[in-house]
Image (cartoon, rainbow, N blue to C red):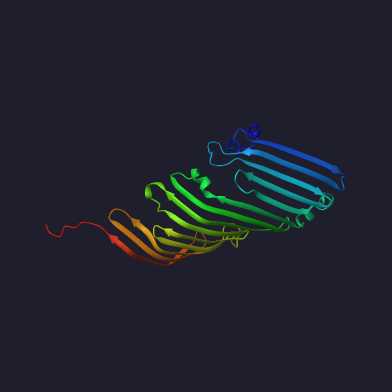
Length: 274
């Protein structure tokens, strides 16, 4: 049981008492040409008190022989397609021992496939949510070398919907976005087709490093809205169109563009005569 490891590993208190783990390792061959087979299995991983989140089984395998190493991993939850990871690289421990820097020059190749996930399963995680919908999927590709990896990934959401209690946040539907990222930048293209009768479009990019190498780089994001609700109460409705641009670093970002009030209504009884 993984619960027995809680005194030594932080975070395991968030895992259900029934979760179990198993580790296997087999080493053969010679010191010059070793063969390694290893695996890690974790079963029935779940979050206590969150029955909507299904139990998940995780398996990681390593097979290294004849100068090559293959790594595979799979996470399987009930009623979901598995999330899978596969990677490969050279396995030359004798060479690395004689020249440790050579390890950093080894080529790597890997791929992570994230399954299609229905967000409705996670509605209980959002306080005051009456409805949560949409489907997400994603992929990550790894290339380059151990010392200088190249990572490119993408995450997609389609058919998103959110409805909250109380009405402080208007109902959102037709939510969609594409997020693309690597080790240097993040790009996003998103939309909300129906935001209380209006709509919203976001498109932009942020650099993850600045020239000094001590923080995030600049961003360039455009926000366009049509009929966006700004104020809605018992006597006032205000909507606006917007075409804005956010540019610069987080510390010195500048907002430019136009905002125009449209289709607004003021309801109030006014006594014209004393």
